[in-house]
Image (cartoon, rainbow, N blue to C red; front, side):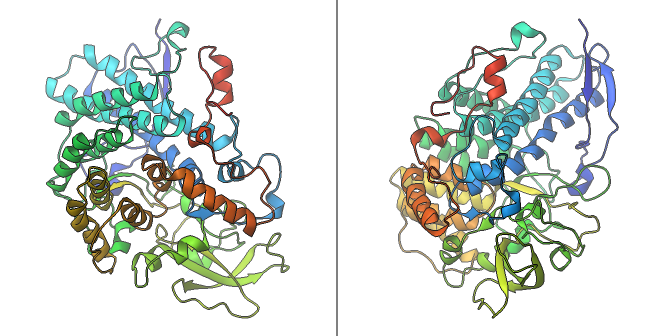
Length: 512
């Protein structure tokens, strides 16, 4: 039976140009599957729909990959208290199967998977050139692998859907093991890479490339139960031979006027404007204030969305003296409180200060915030064109260093780490350990949603988070007694409750 398919093409028109031109609104269209998937244009538009769920992963990532770990916390705000405060549940390790952000990420990943499966299914019978079909297949397989990697690293083994779902019979599957999911990711990426372009010029188009696929493949090899370090090393060394390089200035890596540059391997595309292409994640990182004008150039009331993903003091203090990444990543707002109660009142921002040697002034309050993604002034409230970095060349260098240390090749890892440190204005290390690499990744990739999976991949999460949780409970008396219950079961998130109710074959993760 032919079914109506609605494409919400509010994402990306796949052009051969770069940066903002990669993004263009397309009207919502209702068409039938019987007349679609016939032309190259049809498949390009379908691929648009397969890219768009990437955007929905950014926001849960702030909570599930940064705030769940030890880089950031939140500003306690009494008016926000209530049973539905799901963000704090994630941070405090008290989340359950109905926690909103955890569920939304799961659904976004499967939305992307569903769209990729449909493309791959219809591509087989399409009367189009082999060259075009290979191009579409390469990008689509990369995206499917990306969504499954996001699922397996956050939820463990999940149902593997590899065909278009066409009826209720094909809708419900039991869970595959984590290793089965990783094996499928690896299979998809190995098939995708020969059909993906290598980067030859910058700025890039914003689409999937062989470099992005090799980066994801290396992470898959290094994350599966039985690590395959030598295979990952080969993929990462291939990336080092490509045209990527570090930018001279760390702050320029995140500039909204310098997108898809030579350090970027893959980033999620956004564009400021009235057509639904914008990002607004920077507002979640700003303090709770009734007027953001000093930060953004616009007077936006940010009391409700703000105050999340706040750099904690321990992390700020962990930067080495002279690390250029600190002032490029974190600023301090100085101000006063409306009413004077830090638990009840938003801040009136008076000035932005550098974090390095800040000395609090009498009768002023101050709050650190993530500044690396903010490049105002903006022209529209809650509307920016800031892209989200997924893979960068610095990430590849440090991942290869981690890989080499794990193989007992620390001497080969040392120059890779020092290359990143030197860009940050730091002196060379004379030797390197796994802890050194993890520490370098923590500061180089701060707030880019890598910390949680880094801790899990390196086996450091239980020890680091247990110590961190104890310190946080001593510091903040509002944290419940059952918070920071650090157990193996909590290293993956729960399957959404609704899914376990509609699919009798879907088992919940232990501990939820």
